[in-house]
Image 1 (cartoon, one colour):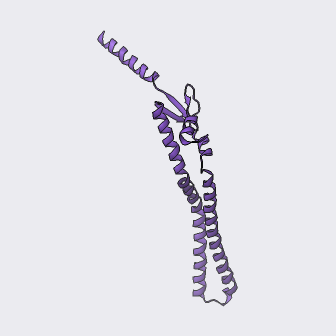
Image 2: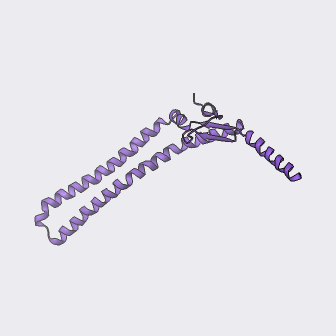
Image 3: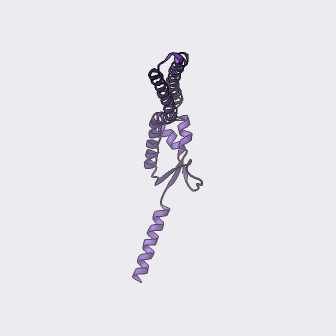
Length: 164
């Protein structure tokens, strides 16, 4: 009888604890779109891409100049000079290919570097709202497929960040 009583008490405590939990959800994507300064990321990213484009154009221009010179002088070159120039042109082609391969990762890395301070501000605001309002869990709606019986804390996070 004591075991049954203990099991019932433990079950009651677990149920009470489960029902006492407070859940909330937030749309961090919505907040991110309207954060002050977020529009500067696109400008900075465009400048970064432009700089990468300039580097690429310079490499292609160097390759084209050397290729044109090689084609023009090919008939008068010794075998050793011809090999040296072919290797030089091939080396530039390899650098261009490597650059093209790595440039997308560089752009993604720069975007993450620029966006991370904004993400950190949102995360801190969500943590503050959760503590102030005694939420046990706050979920982001971008990862939820269904939510019910949960408070939308997006307005509280916006207020915490000073966003209207």
